[in-house]
Image (cartoon, rainbow, N blue to C red; front, top):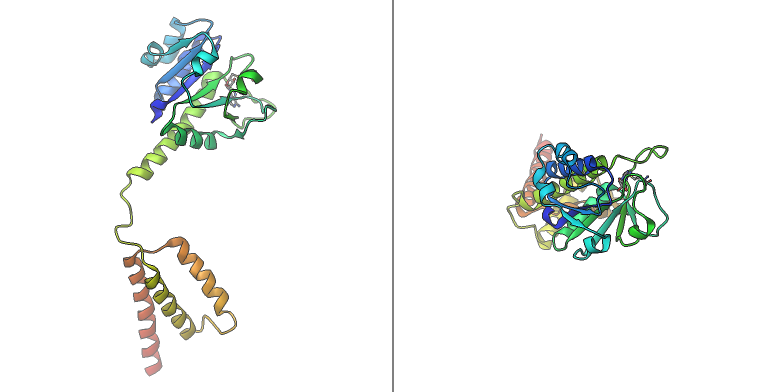
Length: 246
Ligand code: SAH
């Protein structure tokens, strides 16, 4: 899925930053790099800073214009060191990663970065569906290009790991969810026990039972969990009965 995500560097001036971006990408499992009109590429400096992520540099797509670079993408996210008034939804890196990972399940996504000295122009940003700003110190907000790529690739990786976990983790519920009938019988039983132990009284019972229903409704116990809860109620009644006998 990360293969559906491209990092696009628009008109980068320092080849070292291209190498650093490639390294940042590879450490986080991304591989698709696109360079739009780089000042100096290929370059020994880029290769040196890539520190072994040469394959990403070798496979990088080089385009003349941003339009050419973006032609095949369905979702484009722009990065900005400053919050700009370009009437684009503005998100933080985490929300941005969530949107990108969701989109990348089925679409090709480009995450675009601006030139070191100028950033993306407002016109370039307007091509984007979303704008992401890394919430840096307002008085010193601009990260080095390679560092910005690293932060965003890290968030993408974290989000991808979370979604993969969600898909791959064995489902903790191996039993059917309790049905409405079981739940109603449970609520009757719970009501009875809470009355017996004096937790509920006739004035408060409706409100509290409604809150308890809401709580169990959120949890949605399965049949085994519900029979444990029923067991606790029965045991409570048994204790009460034996106390009464004494
Ligand atoms: N002087 C430029 C800074 C460009 S920094 C400006 O003010 O826009 C080069 C690129 O790094 C930016 O275009 C952006 O892609 C990325 N970048 C730097 N700091 C960032 C931040 N805080 N949030 C998001 N991207 C950032």
